[in-house]
Length: 241
Length: 241
Image 1 (cartoon, rainbow over the protein chains, first blue to last red):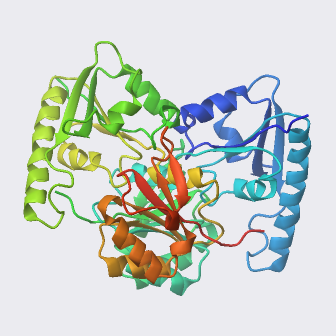
Image 2: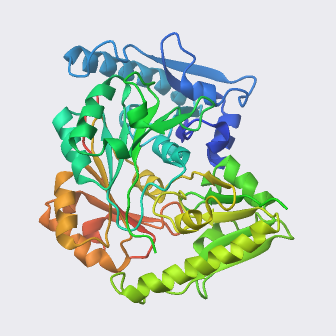
Image 3: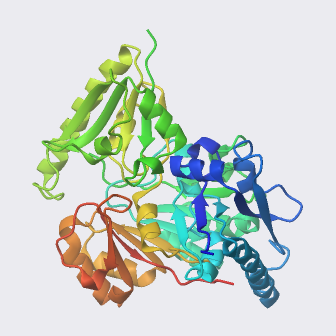
């Protein structure tokens, strides 16, 4: 029997109608639907597609063994995730081997800092893979600010707030436009880096971009407790005829 | 009479079914449709929506007075474009003032290096504006390479090839993952900058991402004559459990 196809489907930033027409069609027709989530939570990806699924869909929830309980720098973090991705891969390989296609839900864009990439790297060459790009969370965030993020020749830098404080400071100093993601518990560090770079007053915080609970505010007006789905934006100021 | 709403609608990278469900609905229902194009050409944005429009749609083609005939550095370039955007704004303001909504087609994402931003800056505060984010051309390009663009803590830098060669070289040296756009006539310069940064062999060229004529190749295998819709990608090599 020939292997089914693994679809990595970008769902976009959060609103169901910001998924692409192609993604919408794949999700509505899926017989096997897989998605990541934190144990005991419904999961953001699954929430986006609520009400769109076939009555007979088979769901494959892949529950992270850890999220923020263990620091990234602890070797146990990498070990736990590595084993988790290996098990998820084996499970999906079983479904694909039976000839069934699997649609994997991906928040944002599958190839942009996503968990799907860890399945893709383990299953490419074993099963056919098709990736449907999505609107990134950062596009959702800068759209929410109501202002363009880049003009003319602006340099855009995308940073993860998990980087060391001095790396953040130097990169923020050197760029025109800025996006920072993976903020969560790193907000206080990020704020110090923005301050040291002299850019704090230009920074916007967008929480839950393009979701019902979206909030947009100057970063200086926010506290250091922010939801996981938070993105910081600094708009470029480049050439504009 | 109340002003109509100006919609800036992201079409995504080029395939019609990569536009969002929200964009698809707005385009199909539009009574007034506006788009930029080079004089004498059908225009890429207009081509994407071919076959989707109302029979009675009123089209407003906005034709650039110059594209690459005058260098960016020549003051006449800025003057010509400034006058062009002012005239386009006046024209659309007339339609909006009559109470009609206008859907402006935007390749990629409207707030990411797009021409729509020049209408937005002139019409915000005059008419209600709604922006629908889109899948960026760069998402389309890295998806076409078949490999994720960013992992873990990778820093992503987005550059315009119109920047000076030594700026390109230094930025390319300093980043993990890279996207370069606005390549066109700047390919030879960009190639020298990649070589000087020691990254030429890691670079991919994607022409017409997600369009029927899509081509993906290692940059070292390409010539210096590339189409306007070309994007260079270097994939990050960050943490992967």
